[in-house]
Amino acid sequence: MIMRLAQSLGYEVVEVDDGDGTLAVGGHDGASALRVGWRPLIVEGYTGSGSIDRFAIRTRDARHRESLRGMRERLRGDDRDDDPVELAEPILKLLQPGAYGVRRWPDANVHIEPFGENRSAWWYPYEPIGTEGTAVIPTDSWPPPNDATVGMYADAISRGDRPLSVLLRSEPPGDEQDCAAFLIDGHHKLAAYRRTGVAPHFLDIAHLADRRPCEPDDLRDVIDGDGQLEQSAANLMRYLERGRR
Figure 1 (cartoon, rainbow, N blue to C red):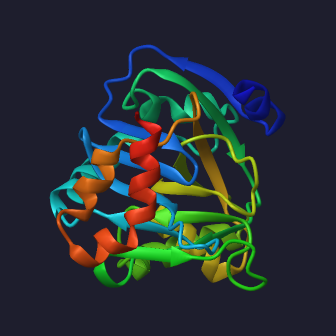
Figure 2: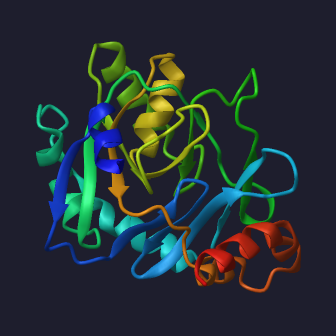
């Protein structure tokens, strides 16, 4: 079922046999975790508050984000290559073994959900303004700090180039208006697309696995004893715990 969905959306299915697992995404959309260096970096899901609001919580441990920054040199690919699987090869080598879908996603409709107070991001799907399309969750500072780099990419986009930012998600999107993806590389590129008003282009990688929520311990680790976040995420935690019984 998930393979057919992936193929219908333009993903090419790839079996990763030799990935080292230092980069991983687990769970399903609405209850997923991004892990870097075998530790959870971000968990996203529904609040379960009776509304349709969604949120993401990021770890307080800055070493996790530094680890991801350090890996980005291994995530570089030739954006001009027509084969998305070849472009994704450096990333696939970092992922845990399993099946993945890889696609070029041009002219994407997304909204960006940066982290604000208390390491959290909140949004409402289907809002008429501001949250149309896929929620992109940055894994680093947003907006990105180097304006000169953003300007360089903006000039290239204005000349007709279409550089690729990289998304990693827990499954193919069943509903483009209510789904989330982690931005693991290309923050400056995405900011440049925003600056020019051109719809962004992505290399989009989706995990293809059974639909089960992420581990409750992933959420516990990113909350890290914060009482306010524990209260906000209580319903999601109950859902994750039920899913692992």
